Length: 99
Image (cartoon, rainbow, N blue to C red):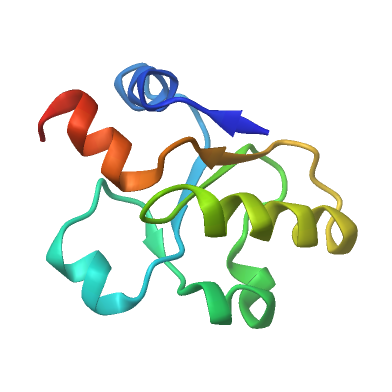
C-alpha cells in the first residue's frame, strides 16, 4: 500500500503510533531525512527484529520504488498487513513541503 506525503505528514503531526523506516543508504540518510530509523534496503531482511510488527510501518526511499518493492517481499515474510511505501519517496515529501 502507498501513503502520500500529506498523509505521512498528518501521521507525524498527530503523533500517531507508527514506525518510519528509511531504506536509503546511510550517507543519503545523513545528508537529509525526515526522521525514523535508517535500515539500508540490502539490510532490511537481515534486521527484521528492528521492525515493530505490532504497528503500521512506513518505508521510504528516494522515489518510492524500492520501498514499494520491499513491501511486496516483506508481505510474504512477516505478519503485518499495515506496510506502507511513501509515494514518490523522500523527493516527493521535500517537494511537497519544501523542508
